[in-house]
Image (cartoon, rainbow over all chains, first blue to last red; front, side, top):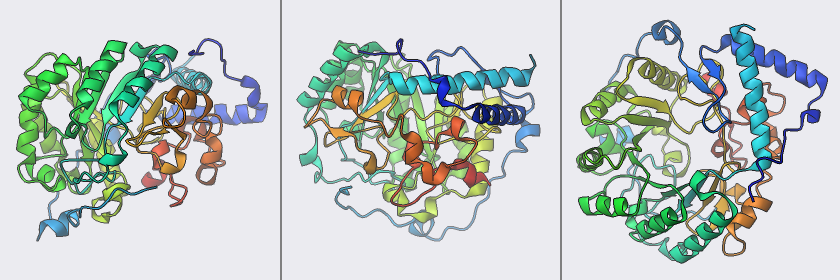
Length: 89
Length: 360
């Protein structure tokens, strides 16, 4: 049967030095992250996001579409697939 | 407590929850790769699907899948586990709709991922009767890009007709479009989203082309660093500015603090072998359909899926760090990233699983 309720994360697996380093990394991550990271999501396992205030400032201007001459489809898209048997890993 | 403290607290909680899930492994998503056969032969296909029937002889029969579903429903709450039928193109195997109906009777919400070529009015009606709950249709850009990538002229028109049929029917509320982004279509994504809006599509997921299968043998399609940045920026901007369509990055790995929780709702989390299991077309069992075949955990010809799920998968769970040691040892991002997506790891090819390296 599903044993979600019995198991617990084992905090003892993490040493104090590793814990400090981990906290330091998470603080640096959090200070760079432009998204708010929230608790209390539907699955209970993955935080969800709120978005930053100014997308242009954060992500820069929209990309400009470019196009180049495309002589033949295969030259652009690569060779058309040839039927072959499925690979056996 | 300031904003950074709150974020750190959330991340600590996230890490703790991930560790907990490795121990509880509640099955939430069961893929069934129903067939390797496909009615298209796409240039960017991430698998080795074939148009011929050569692989049909290896396909697991539907009664076996039904037996597995039955035993899974006895062991786990079916209503919490989505049963996702994929391929190949699943609809080339007509009988999968009956398997879906059976799954629905057992309580599984079920869905399919399809290229849309066989979504006729009749098939859509049968899917409804079988209580299909979710459907994802592949559309890889504007008409020209889609037809060329799909290697089939007229494909775009057929698929968009099918999409209109789905959108016209309120039954299919959990519907989205999946778009594989390659070097071919990356500069036309704005135009593509406009077309989706015109169609009335309300959700699209962009997946970077994946170097496996046929796509792995077609270097021209692969994305470079500027392309990845362009894609991430595009998605982030769309999420800021579009209210009529939900745009997300799908599947790929961990993109670091600037992009996590920005390009998709959720923080990166590879649930392969933890929340997600797969029965391949020939009965072998693995985490996700796209992971290397080095990570097969069993075969339903020999053991039940439940048995394999409960007693296997240590490489995906407690031994995950060992699987990624070569690429990830000593990396401080490990606790959040855990090697990115398991499908990005290929030990034989010594391929890096690191999305951050792609952005460096």
